[in-house]
Image (tube, rainbow, N blue to C red; front, side, top):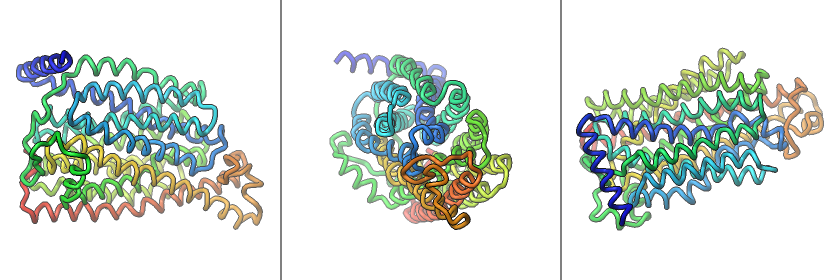
Length: 477
């Protein structure tokens, strides 16, 4: 009761501040951006540390893919839907704060893991970051910002993903060279506890659906807070537009996520850069490109969408049609400098699908279903996308490496390369032929999966046709 009174009082005070100067929603957005940044740092630090972890624990590449993808997806599904449903009914600020403490602690514990199984369990705990960050944060943003500014606001929040990865990779790479990967996890994880306190006491919980104007054709429940998850999911998937957008998001993640996992190991294997150098070049190129795409795609879709709402679908479709071939071209380069130059543009374009896709989904559903919709989208992108993609890529590398090596040398790769990508351990990269075999296999696997980026473009284009055919109103409202 007291918490409820406190929340109502805080919201009224926040409304007064917003009406007085219009700045409070942007301050809230800035704090939520820091939360997302923390989540992204904790998530992507394993990408830059991947080769060091692989060598320390003698892992195969499919196990490395398991750490970066599946470990998140399991706990996202277990915790994501209950937390999203709770966010549609309860205090979203409290949910974000508690989850922030949890995933920060789990990140720190990763540095204490004694074996692969323990590290896998702790990485699953970090998955709470995705479950307890994005759905309630998106729900808060949709209440603080009207439709005409919502895509831009979601895009600004989405900057936390590439910026957090950038900071994590640059700072993490330097820290790994200085103190090792274990201490780096401790350094990255612990500051999140302080941020959780700031979120809990500085953000006011708004009324659900405070900005609840949605486009014509959006699902409108009779009593949104009483419906089951199955009921909400059936209604969302019965909408042809929402269904194809969700499929497009899942497939886009499936075919682009391997480059997030294996780009750093590929550079170490192919060009022999230090972890500090890898963190700098990947942070500036891959994550810098994603950061520009995240905010640029939101602004572009909001601008063009006022003329024709189909631009909210055409921007994601274009990002896949152009981004996939650019990824292939980037991995085909013979030097790391050319690779990173093209990777900047490839990452910038291939990441442009996220913000407009979320804006379409939130316009197509009831305001009371937005956190649940975010959880469904996140689960599909995690379980069907970022969970499967890195494991498949790692398995292809593990299969290709000994095949390529043995065709040339007519001898056992596992015997000569200290296990290589077999189950017995990590390849000895000090042996040139071993390094060449695993580097070429990594390149071919990444290029092959990027080719399929053309597939999700079909779903975005089909959703645009259905939106137009059904005569739905514009999204920029």
